[in-house]
Image (cartoon, rainbow, N blue to C red; front, side):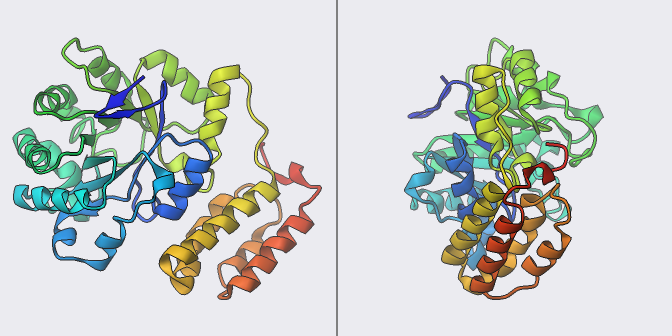
Length: 334
């Protein structure tokens, strides 16, 4: 069983990826309910935390039912990273994770996220600064390298472990790939097979079905895997994968009523955490994913993304359940 500090994870754990504007407490709560073993906050700017930026501070919210849960930070300045780690420690997460993988231009241009892949010495200094400033276990999420000609994950893994990093998650793409093309887990497999590496190694990238999860589990022999985009609007994927691991059989897909229940809970928890107005508006981006593949759903989706009152939204949800009550073959391709 993988161990991170005092955190003992189940055999081959499934991790929920930290995703900007997605992995907030309401979404994490759903994923926890449906089998996620370890979760992370949205990534948080170290400089934003120090400035007391409201959005950054709000991302520090964690709840006991989520545990184990980590707070993920990013930045390119040693002092800021060290101070932000101290701030993170005050909310008592189970671990601190450092993002050296975000490929987005506005992050990379600040010398943070995947931008640090160009300078391993800087990556080591930033990580050391965090480790020295907190008593919490420190983990890292990164990519294979900047581009195909500069894949440096082998050196990264060894040097990070040497300074005290307690687990490494690798998104098996380069920064140049962004989220396109295929991920290449053979590089992560090579790290895991390195006799010098003893910390848990988790893989990330392209896990979108129980079949692929089992194939990658058996093929690459890692300590666990992280799931990101496949969980958006589909938190059931965690338990589906676990069931497939145990039995070799697929669980029945969620019914329309299951999807309604998940979307409605997500909305309720979003309103509780963000306030009614913001919760309603920010929830709109999720409806397409929750109801993906349902025939003739366009009219309901249009109403969901234009309705401003929570009672009216709940009425729409009830209508959807009634209309599709005996129509679960409406889920195309399931």
